[in-house]
Amino acid sequence: MLKVWVDYSTIAFDNLTGIGRYIVETNSILHKNPEIELEGACKFSRWKNRDKIQKHLPHIKLNVFPSLCKRPDLFHGPDFAMNYHGRAKKVITIHDLAVFHPELVDINRVETPQQGRTQKMLNSNRIDAVITVSEFIKNEILHFFPHLDKPIFVTSLAANHKNFMYQKQESEPYLLYVGPLDKRKNVLGLCKAFELIAGKYSDFRLIMAGGSNGFEAEKVLEFIAKSRFRKQMIYVSFVSEEELQSLYSQAWAFVFPSFYEGFGIPVLEAMHYGIPVLTSKNTVMEEVAGEAVWYVNPYETTSVAEGLERIISDDTLRETLIRKANTRVKKFSWEQTAQKTLEAYKEILL
Image 1 (cartoon, rainbow, N blue to C red):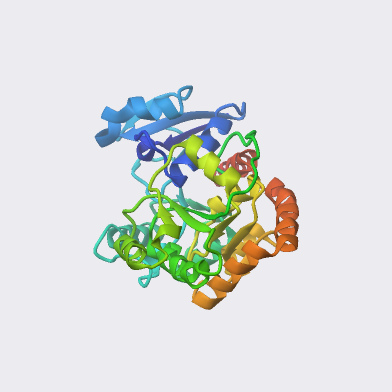
Image 2 (cartoon, one colour):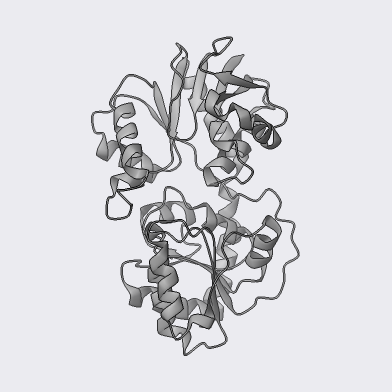
């Protein structure tokens, strides 16, 4: 039986990020697999919050490190970092390499240290393998680290919501964006594109749900405040799970013209809710969504605006996208993510 410890330090909080959901969903499934003896690990600085970790994963034993009482066969750092220095095999998950795109990140915040840590780790012998979430990011790793001699395993992600047994409601006239107000998500470009069509579709709103602490979020909020269509552009910050389900289930369409993603879970979420999706034509979105969404060029405001108008007004297109999405989402599940993760563990330990 494989003895695997996973670093849970980054889920020592009440609210989970996308990476936190990845950790919880995959480990909940792996814990039930008879081929693996799975335990959690938490660094000492987060040990005071261990009750919050156990709330997310109540059935998995939790240990504190660096003073670990025993050695696993493999230690997994699922959130970019490897904080374990023991003699077990080591694997990290790289979710994206956004920090290597300086035009999209704030070099004065955490991105610069993270870039340095990632470079140091991938250029050292501290790890034995890398797990990543898409072929796109695997190719990026090989591009930025062409001399990397560690195996890279791809374990695609899935939609965050465990239960999609919601009551489908009649679509309301609003376009939904879910995510932080962040430069790499192209939220400002989305607002500018919506402004171009807002006068023609005065009954439609653009609703944005997510954190306001992203890079250049203030520019988005300032643009909305000054726009003559500001009453049609609504920012609602963080929402509860129930509120988010309601927003998804009633939306006319989901709009996500991001510049850069490692995977794009919100797109899969929207497809699960049976609403048409507009997103960016780039490598990872095409990998995830296939032909089940409407693509735009995120770098051209007119392209995004034309896409918004098309997804508002073309009923045939909307029905086609919904039908294709119902098939596409079946290709992704947390069970599949967990199984591929287990296969990676086995191969690393060969």
